[in-house]
Amino acid sequence: MFLTNEINKYQPKNYVQEQVLSTYPGAVTNGELTQTVKEKLSNNGLNEQSTLLATSLCCDEVNRVLEHDLGQVYGAHFSMGGLAGFPFGGVTAFTAMAHHIPDGGSCLVVYGPHVGIDNDGNVGMLNRVGRKASGACCGSAAAAAGYVRSCSGKEVEEGGGATASASASTTPTMMDVMDAQQSFVGSLLLPYADRLEGDLKEAAVELPLALFDAQDKMMKNIVSQACGEVAGENGKIALLGGVQINTPGDDNSDYFLPLSFELRSNKNEILANLLG
Image (cartoon, rainbow, N blue to C red; front, side, top):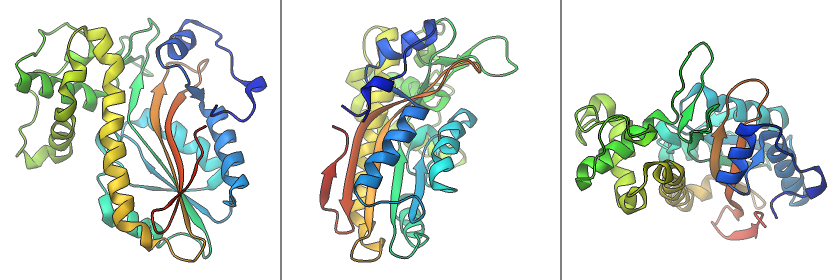
């Protein structure tokens, strides 16, 4: 189990929280995540003072909460991410981050897409502060799913739900340099098109999981190329990947579904699987 102390596992208090845990079994609150990560890394020799936090999370302001929570332990973070959470900073960003690690230290890289669950339990939607109606979350993911459907000839009519919110006419072309990141999000989601077919509600649940698989592959390719930039004989790379789950209001915690948690050497050797 991911949690180090099951006795303290957070219990749902309302409908939104129940929906989170039934839709994404294994999700933990930000507080649970932060405490567990701290304990597991400490047990593997990564202390708070010499571990640099890096993130690859979506630009959406709702995702700054997780960075703040982790920052309470590890301090200011280095940002590698862009739309939908893809590590658009690439090898250059990872290399720059590695050169900022304290002498003799290591890094913690947290990455992945996000998805909202609104007050009515709709996956892929979120009630935002100051807005009466809920809206798409993640909007970039929704637009990418619309693009994928348009390419496969399976686009759904407007009103079909969060994942159908972007039509082919509003999705950027692959050569649109004015919206380069979104163009790449759509392109990188294309290989997972079959996972987004069928019922729209099921597709909304599956969308962040498909995006995670694309991002996980990209992040690990980046690490394989740039891991040597983490200096020192004992320099390590902790990779924590998963799906952020955003919830509405002050009464709900955001959640994180851990899907990969590895400790690697600066030679890209897997030293430990910290997920189990």
